[in-house]
Length: 109
Length: 116
Image 1 (spheres, rainbow over the protein chains, first blue to last red):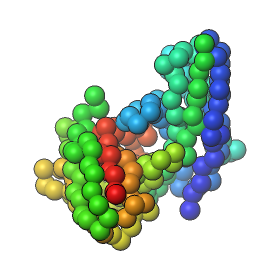
Image 2: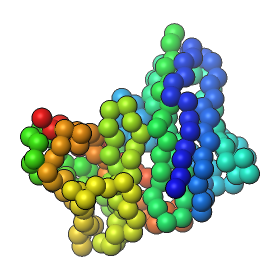
Image 3: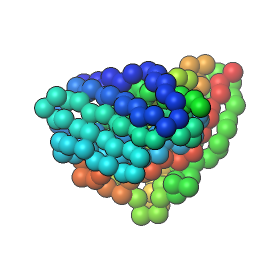
């Protein structure tokens, strides 16, 4: 089977930096994806790491360590609109993306 | 707009009933996925189809079934509905099989099912 662990909630203030961690246990691992979901809306793709290291896309960055089965999403210069749920998801052989339970990020002014 | 269309957006029905949810993937996408999201829960993978054939199964109940038609649209059938089946049901599509793409799925806006 597979499992993913990420914190259930994170709070921060506008302009701050926040890191959302994700650890996983799986087999046939291809990569780790991150998705954002605003309340009740469609999940939207943020980033994907297939190799170790940091991927940067604007204010968001994602990191993967395959040897540690660990990744994180880094959000910089937080804005109120970043308040949402963030999901890590493993891309693995033989099945579709498997998602973690999500981290609710609350950004306050 | 992801290009994935789901209908209906909202559905209210009674226990024991049967419903069908419909999904049209992005133009050209061959893979369709169904996910269930209950209150405060993550996205639970149900089933995947690729070009009309079932490719992977997740935690899909025997009361649930799905298919993908030649025009690539998909339907998820939920029968003998129970209160616990109340959830958001998302359809997603991607151009290729998992493991050979960029880990990106395109999600529809979901169908919210309420079972009373």
